[in-house]
Length: 123
Image (cartoon, rainbow, N blue to C red):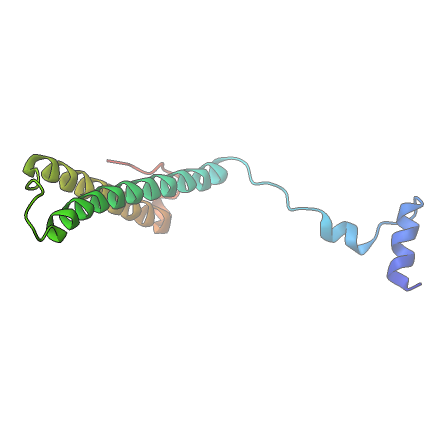
């Protein structure tokens, strides 16, 4: 047996602790305002991801409708509904702007030492 396995066996028999006991012990969790700030950032990035997903969905819907019309070489499909396309493009634009704004606010807030204790403004 090696010396490390002897230490492990000694610890199992009620002896001294092993080096592995120290290594396996996880770091103490962070609590308080610092933890809240990290949680805030986590949730904001979830909002950004949702906004990007919605942007992609609206853009893909417009692309699919335009593709159907573009691929109709015999002219049998109905023209694109201008109101529906306009609404979808507006949704895509607003979602993309929201994602950009949240990223910008989070980045500026996270990097600014003076504001590190204030919540992020989402307007």
